Amino acid sequence: MTLAVLAAAGVDEQMARTSDVLLVVAMMLLALAMLGYTGFLAADDGRRIGTVAQGLTLAGTVALVATIATRALAVQRAPLGNMYEFALVAAGFALLAYCGWALVKDVRWLGLFVIIPVLLILGMASSVWWTEASELMPSLQSAWLVIHVTVATLSIGIFVVGFALAVLHLLSRRFEEKAERTGTEVAAARPRWMRRLPTTARLDKLTYSAHIIAFPLWTFTLVAGAIWAEKAWGRYWGWDPKEVWTFVIWVVYAAYLHARATAGWNRQASWVAIAGFLCIVINYAIVNVYFVGWHSYSGM
Image (cartoon, rainbow, N blue to C red; front, side, top):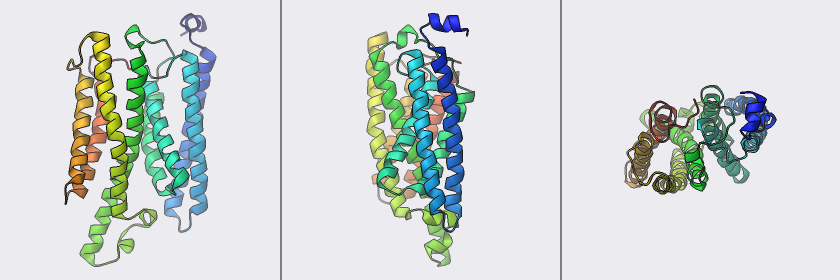
């Protein structure tokens, strides 16, 4: 798209290019942080490496927030109008959730497992979902866009953290059960990189806590989307593929919370939480892109 066309569309091309450059910087910093966290988990005394990785994560988060801010300035609106922008904001919330937690607790053991999905999201955003800065289509020019999509990205950001915790909980439980079978200490049964992790019971509680925060936000996303649909198209529910999958995600996470509250279902509950996150991936990476509906706004 030429400078003249972008200017006519009310888009600041220079700011849009700055946003693209900042995204590359953010991904490079996060990739370095990922290597740092790997060293932290693998080394006998990796505390210094972990601290450096934490600093790189914070720097990468700042760069990603700057990416989102400059994108917003470029398009003169909330950067929530297509899959590219949605992915940036969701990844940003995941990093902010982790960094906020890191301010009050030493959670360097979790850093690698948050950054991996975040980098995958940003990699997809920069390669598959990248969309030129542009104005919104008329149907998306609503305050409900900001409300509905902001809460959706916030909940997904927290679900990313919850997903990482659920995976670690399952891995920890596996080695705990191995220790019980062989009659060895749990610490001895765990690989070296897992010895920095909390206990299995603690990981289970942390997984539950993350989802307890994210689930009400997802519920609000579902309700706000219905209200927006009624105002825009005169119906609360239209069996749009994205609507259906948003509800499927809600049901799966509701099942997780129910299973987690049921005695004897701790391990199975984490599998349900992982299934919920896979439903999110299907919803945004497949349904939103390849299925025709009111939500087909990926910009591809």
